[in-house]
Length: 118
Length: 114
Image (cartoon, rainbow over all chains, first blue to last red; front, top):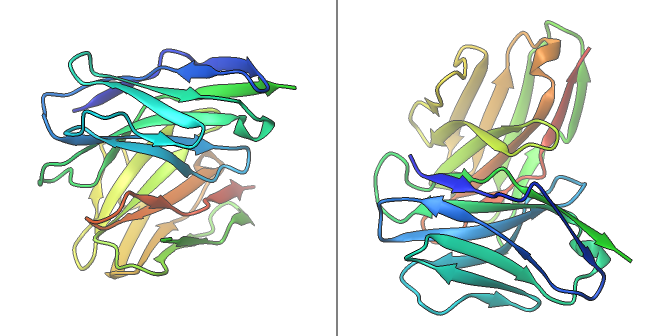
């Protein structure tokens, strides 16, 4: 089964600064999707950004961008100009693009708790 | 955008009660729905995968007789926690997916068994 590893249980950043959250994954597949989800204290799961493995260009959504290194199986999230509202648990997730019994299933990392200091 | 409605958001009930949680996709037909359980400060743990009109596929270690899943239509899946006990207290969250979109999550159900 695919595994997703987030090696930073906790991270903190000063407001307006930049922080990078790490994620690595293990797969033998060549076509897949990667996601970052944010879970604030309300526990709602919010999609932050997604990346298709066949695309070389790194995805960007406003202040959020990823550094996707396919050969290294690395998918880090950079948050620029951090805001107090960015404080949350962040989960990295993998989804296969292949058909089969696991179609649509997300594999999650353990999460990184991000604290933003004013 | 796509919305998934999960109801109820909070349940408090006595031990031995059965509790039903609904998950609805409001503006798309979900090929598959997933049910997760989450303990405090931990990741989402997949309990089962549900496809419309077929039996749910349960993850190893999840009791199918304890956690009954019904997926009667392309927009509705239900999770019933039967004869709930305090150890079943947790946060349960569903997600719905079709092949065209990322997974969309419900807002979760906080279940407390006294």
